[in-house]
Length: 363
Ligand SMILES: C[S@@+](CC[C@H](N)C(=O)[O-])C[C@H]1O[C@@H](n2cnc3c(N)ncnc32)[C@H](O)[C@@H]1O
Image 1 (tube, protein in one colour):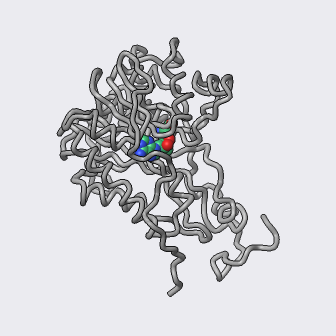
Image 2: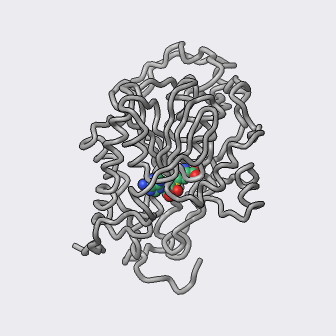
Image 3: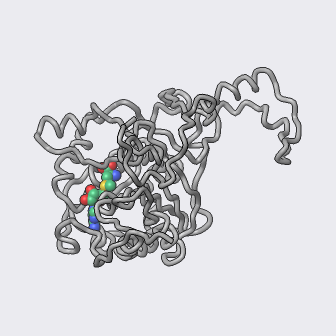
């Protein structure tokens, strides 16, 4: 069996300065506070047990990508994350949720993937006490075909276009409603509602009753969220540009925290983002009238983040534009059925070494 590429490294998944050294209030609004410093201190000093409704966050997986050489580093990541996992569990109300957006990572030098984000999920459930309420996948249709070496040069892998989003809960019964995140009906469903549907049993055994012909005005979404991460003209970006600040390099689009804040919390509930970066979560929580706390360890990221809380907010959407259907930006992304051009696909024999040898002619 081929030996896996691994390199033993000490437990040091953090590159950021001042871990555990400092924590201070950086900015305050009517509903929220940004703290500068290590979020472990934030949870120790400022977050009471069983006081939080939602922890919505995207941890620093970019650092892992730089350093991952297989499972050894995944272990280091877990060791780093565990105190956070324990603190998050303690802080959440029994009805509360932890939502973690986490990107996967390639093992450097070979076309295989790290398991670290799956191991994180298992650790959070097995060792910290969380339940997996649901696993989500955020599909970013604007992702570039990377890593180029495997995807566009050797052509042995496909574009990696999803992030995992782990929705975890403190008990099996976190508060939640899918009515808050409905989507417009598909054309096929609209036709069906217009032309009627004959109730019958499907080959799978599911009984499709007449209830499926009831027009509920909107559809229950799947656990795949399609959002292109292509923000280009926000108040935040304009502020960064005008003030010579670097925009945070790993922001998630506001629609990601908005989805979970809407589905899992009510107005005035408390939302925390412990790895806040440019404070997208705080901005959304402020707009949706939730109380919120953001923690970030690198001050440069917060210099731009404060622009999110200057009036007027980007008035693209407001809490009171109410109907989910009206609010929808009616954006649909196309995902082809894989059989789209099967008949015309390249029949050149597959490279027996799995693409280990770089092709001479790039195609
Ligand atoms: C993936 S980024 C989050 C980006 C954010 N979701 C946004 O949209 O702007 C993760 C952030 O966690 C911060 N971070 C890492 N370790 C931390 C710690 N111990 N306490 C607070 N923040 C930390 C990093 O500096 C980084 O900005």
